[in-house]
Length: 353
View 1 (cartoon, rainbow, N blue to C red):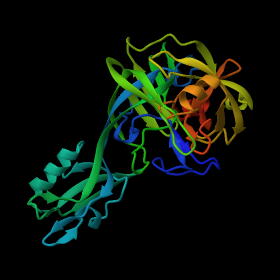
View 2 (cartoon, one colour):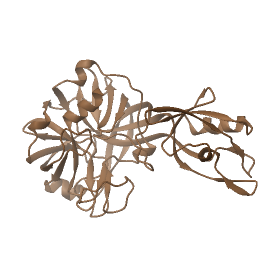
View 3 (tube, rainbow, N blue to C red):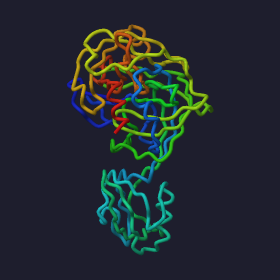
View 4 (cartoon, rainbow, N blue to C red):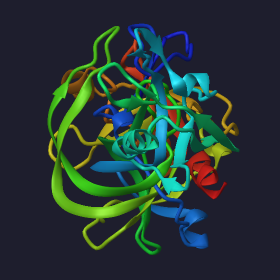
């Protein structure tokens, strides 16, 4: 879940008070997501689903490695950074070194060492573009050949399931994507396993500081992630996936209105509870973002136990007029009783892209 300024000003995920914060627990940047394996066609468009609200853990492995920082090193008495000199940029995804697939930091470092300082051709994905960059690794003063690129290859964290379709064996969660904690870029999904999780304690939110759900991964694998998007993560379930949620219709965007609503989330153990809330503002409901409406917690229990919205609640389903209207995605740092939500219809539409 994201933190947000009360003025609705968009800021970086790791910002200090007065900014937006994702409601996903456990630094999801060093944390989550995976391969694009499609749902059954009718699953993505199902109008009736089962309500989520339960916590889950995810171990996420990138497709390639993402450049998150440049780290110049001493070489022959001066600082050098071959990766930056070769034209690499932050958020670039390195997929291959010469013809060898790269999926871990260790594999990239091994390729640099084996180059012996000769040209190393890197296959790079930058947004929708496929590029080739030629890097000349240099031998640092410590004797190791380096590129100067700091990369991330995996992550893990806890979030909340929004809904699942037991007939087609799929689920949706988080309401936003798994992003790098440093750059905010959507992580490229290579593979990811989803496990059950339990919440053991809560760090309460306060003005200027987002709290968190503090949980542990359990040993039971309940599914796999198949897609990471700006409006949520999607995956397939197995026989261990908890399937006791109420059956609800997905509301069309035009059915969402200002007024009372309910948030289903888990703040202790693994069983969701229902909390009173209110939708206080409708944003651009048709936009493909995860900031479609403002939700305010009005339930004294959730305010007492959590201080409002906390990280880890990302994906907590929002119900209005007995229909699933969306999921919690952000907390406002200046007013932690409030945050953004994404519509359920936009989650479905984003998956279908």
